[in-house]
Length: 491
Image (tube, rainbow, N blue to C red; front, side, top):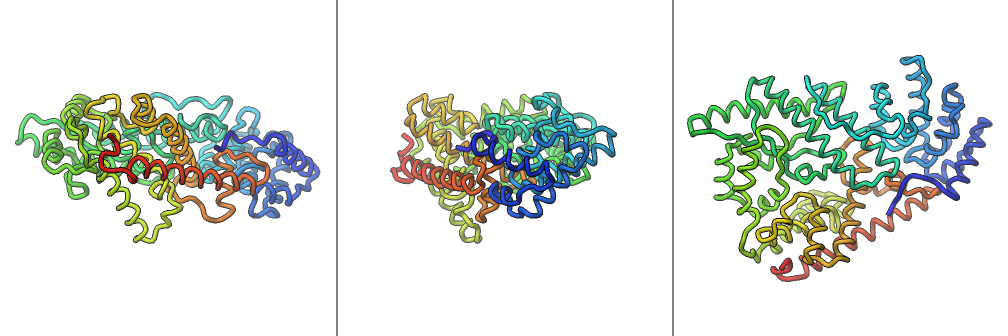
């Protein structure tokens, strides 16, 4: 499904015809329309202006084909012209696309990344030559350094995606990038509040190392105290640190923002303390923990701060999450939770059928199905105690708990859904999961996902066929393995 962004065959012929017209100052708007450009006349003018730039004209055959088959060719051509001018003005040097071949691809896929490059020309170095891996070191020194590190990492990761590398690397790299930035942010907040840092743990997609391109980070703060008297003072200090941590990451500046922080999954939710001692958290889950909290804690993972409290908590909470005795109510509880989510979204007026995440046959169907099996079998099979959906699927197949065909189909479908989500969020760094309903939005999504047919309509048709196939297959598997069976479906 989808593929690397290259034309090939008819795509090469379309590109050659377009470039030939562009060389003579007369690019064919009809070819732009065929490629999927919604405003072909205006786009043709943008290409003419770009081709007339003295630094871009000699590189015409490097950048024009990539832009022609991008999500918005006219917008991308205008941005490339703007970028070439900015380079000449600020650096007294031409924009050399031979050294940075990813630039046209990035400009054609993401308004957000285009603005990022125009705002900070130094980032062009991140796209020179083979796109390097995200650096392993943490940013240090300031909140500004955290934001700069984040955006440099996003640019690298997005560029490699758009150039056709395997998508499975991206969520892991995005999670590792977030880990480094959050660890540095914890240090900033500790210094700002003169408070020893607590233990920082991740939940949700960050916990599973499957983070989105633009996602909240679900976090949990814990600390260890020797006694009750010390606990009250430590709690107040840590709460102050957590507020500084959240504000520092979410505050928008001229560099952007770092991360949206969600602390609502902590004990007692939004009404609970911002941080808890290890013992207080354990008391809460053992006394009041609900089924959805068991499911949530599957993805618990240490990120930063003192490590021993995290390990102590993980060991102590495991019997709550992964019960030794078979729990026949797991399948029923997971089914009920998924149905409730869909009903709530419908009542709120959401277009649930277009929701990649929470709609029928969407991302949540795969996650909930896998987590039901983890809860059911994880007490006896420690191999299943992991946060990654794809890795857990692989283990379920290896252990014979799911048919190999189901594992293969669900893995492929989940990867496709996550790629689509990633491509949507890349445009403006917004947390969206809505599959576009209008024609040109669908063509643009197809291009970002690597559907390389020269005709925009054919790329769109393939996208829609895959979308239908994926949703149908995921919901079929969900119903067959959970909804259509009794409460012992996962047995």
